Image 1 (cartoon, rainbow, N blue to C red):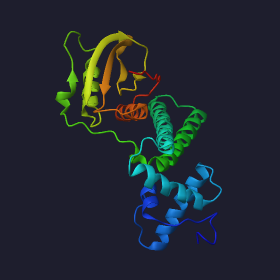
Image 2 (cartoon, rainbow, N blue to C red; image 1 turned 180 degrees about the vertical axis):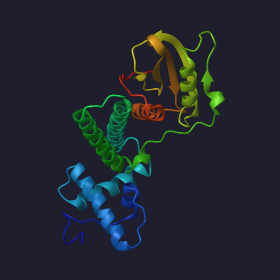
Image 3 (cartoon, rainbow, N blue to C red; image 1 turned 90 degrees about the horizontal axis):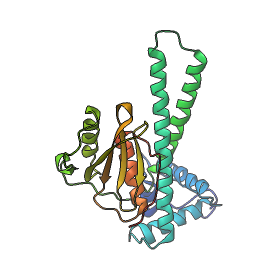
Image 4 (tube, helix red, strand yellow; image 1 turned 60 degrees about the vertical axis):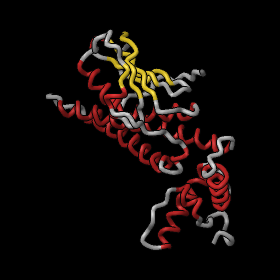
Length: 262
């Protein structure tokens, strides 16, 4: 089919199957149809005129860049950056639809009858971002192992760096820091200092070394500046991905990103 109609078909092969993360189907026909659907999505996303060309591009990327882990390959780096862009959008979409779900619960819990128009508007926004999140999950699951964040071998108790000079802002901070330490991708949790900041709690800074600064905001704008670190961080792409792992684990947004070189 690929040679008869290269605009719509490609050759199924182990490298491209690996790239597309295809799961086995009950028969070869369904497996090939699933393969073509994913391949056509890639062709549309990356502006290939022919599906066969997208097939060749994915095969080349895996064989020449991914398997040998050739970081000097320009396409390899651009694809990693694309994955980070998709992950940023996915996290934002998740946060938006979760926030709309929370607002709906607040309205339903009110004693007086809420406006039906407001409920319908929030439901519409929630469903919009949920669809966007689900669509981005499809892209996210393809070739996502290009970015490798090592898991920490330390226990949660071993991860804390704290000199006990400053008290906790509140009990919520203690719970929050313990939640950070539970993340398998966080290797160190450092209580940097106390400060003041407006809500919400947020990730406020990402450095190329992998250091991520979190502002935990308690009552009356009293805040704690907390820094977390991965096991290692080869480049800024990995630093951003690590920050997204922290954001997803704690459900706090990334509100400011600054690249700092060392």
